[in-house]
Length: 259
View: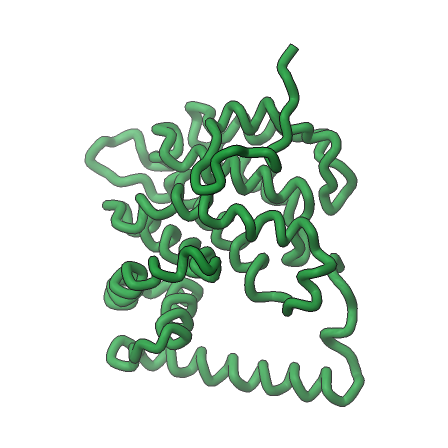
């Protein structure tokens, strides 16, 4: 029988356990999800290393749908995120569809999809709620405590040869550096963000890079295009509308998560 150990007792705060240890050593049945408990896990995470890229792609969506709901972090979200991070450097995650020809890069490497989900979780843990909400969200606090470990897995892919991988790595790394111990790493992210802005047309990626540079005190106006300006102005109008809607008592920002 495999001894069950909690991921919360991981003795390596700045590193990750082996992915198999996470898979077999987590009591998934005891962890809350948006729909009950993680009883159906860990069958789907195990398929993330399947030789078939289509199976891996389906597994990423299946696992994410099992633990994600309305930007809220649940108990099961945390070990899933750790597992995603732990398999980033596994050879199986390097490829995706269109990988049958060695001369053609994979269109959607599994690694990029995993980084995308890690970035979404890190963003949800950092930016959606204020400190008052955070006190009522132990699972969000648990994820935040593990940001150095997750960052240690994401960082090596910031300079990856595949554009999708390195861009998703940057977007994942940005919210992770809200951890006080990781703020010095923002210096290296600045150049990666500027590089993304010279090559990418991805709206979400560009918004995240521009927002980070602005928040960190770097002028990126020379890298903005007309779409960036339009997106920023639209977001400002939406933020103003949300503020006025909440301020007049009509709703918004009054309920405690999870929703």
